[in-house]
Length: 150
Image (tube, rainbow, N blue to C red; front, side, top):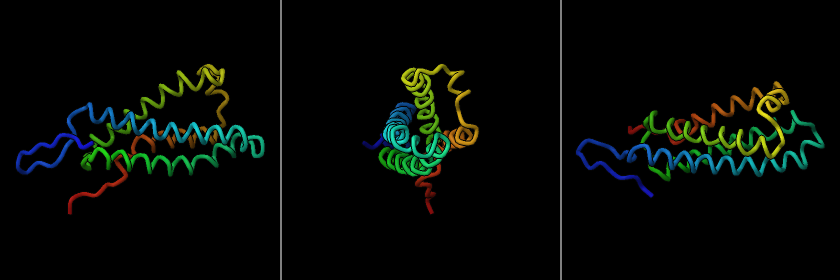
């Protein structure tokens, strides 16, 4: 699924507007959210009872980091996005928007928490790492496969 190509001489391939960025962001979100859902289930069922919430969440973060790298790389290559910050950051921020909406409208009700209860229940260390990971998630499409023409 390659985006439309601008055949003007001297121009490089570029996505056909926001639609391609939106699609790529949605797919990126689905891939990372899916990995997080699987890992979160494993964490809650088997890791938390043995190690506690903080350690379990911190153990999950490196795996999610790797999943984020692979998902971002796959999406950027699949859509053949050029190494333009606006496009790639757009993909990441669309995905971040989807992730936050999913977190607050699906995950919290499933866990029986309000937003206030969610923030109050977060471990300060694991919560801070999670916030950093949200930022990493948003910028990863820009950081991966970042090869400028040489």
